[in-house]
Amino acid sequence: MEEVSIECPHWEPAIQLMEYDDGSRSLRFCYYSETRFGRGPMMLNEEDIDRMASAIGESRPIKDLFSRLSGVDQSPSP
Image (cartoon, rainbow, N blue to C red; front, top):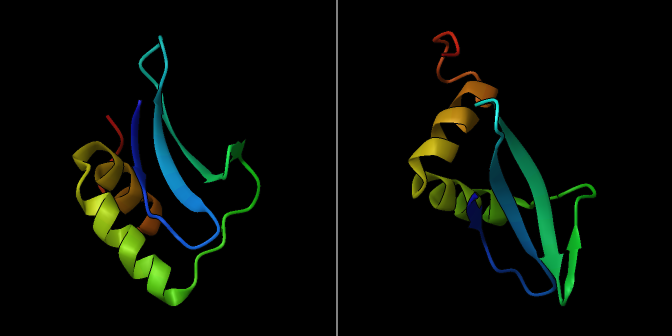
């Protein structure tokens, strides 16, 4: 599983690329808080958005799917 994350004072928001046996892929938005893993709402302030954008840029597969989500890449899915 591919993952990008940033460290914040009280938690670590993350975006994970989930790949399934049938070849489909999904992005999971989640976070770590101390020893807990959570899939609840992930909120990022403006500073953290910039940091997460940098982290996303380090993972080509996540960046490719995320750009489709944001409307940057309008090419059809494979």
